[in-house]
Image 1 (cartoon, rainbow, N blue to C red):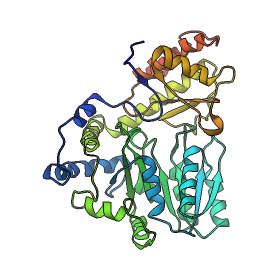
Image 2 (tube, rainbow, N blue to C red):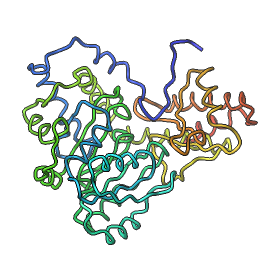
Image 3 (tube, rainbow, N blue to C red):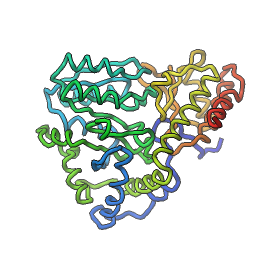
Image 4 (cartoon, one colour):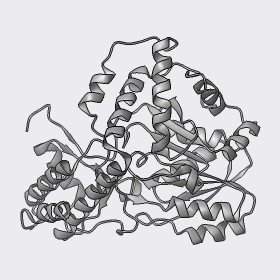
Length: 381
């Protein structure tokens, strides 16, 4: 293994395209100068299609968790009732944020590895009519589940007056999203996943309905106050010092995405998911999620006859290939392969081939090439 060759196949941070790295290496500019004004003016319209919205998308310097906290602090106040749909570790993060702000939180728990059933949420909303916001996770990174947010939005709006707020951190930019059409009131993502940037930016878009709530909300907030970002963005500015290098990289990311086309990007991610899943099926290694619940950006595998951590060690030590482990009670039980952002079918084929060798190294009796062939057939098909 070459000491400086690292193959990053975790569900974030993800690899950075070389042209984006070069863009981020440009000389620094003044954040209140005309160059930054022009940069933001260029970026603004290109973010909207990725979210599927006509609204401006606020850009906050901070991690995805900063965006999740902003979603809470701008829409609800202490004592308000909210519902959090927890399908994994990041659904639980919404619970922790709401608890920190003394929000009365109802949680609807779904077994890890399964997607939420919209009908169950209908019953919950009927039982608790005072709920002011429903928080859900689009792609649950910890399990590789893609939740049916389009159907969830319909249920929320037809059976309550609650806002529907979605964490899209590990899938926006890699899956189809029609925020306005589907009825998502507030949508959050981060820079380090399908958006092909380092960690450090969070993006938030809000519906007209959400803005009415935000404007009337008396909950104190300063750095995360979304009205500041909206008002400044209208003037092609930011309320606080932005991460300028990341903005320069973002402009190039958006150029690359426009060149490929959103439909082609979404198809590429779905193809990589199907190749990965076909490979592990061919190797007779169980997948955590069903085909219906599977995310195009991350696949979770739950081995029955070998240790996930033993495989991860060989992948890393012998090949420099990093895949993610399980979180919380699934630590040591699963491993997760990220296939999002700057990732192609060629990367998937490389990953599967290396996994096959490493399985042999840890004593798993497999037919070499069987998983790779299954992935190849999906590609050719």
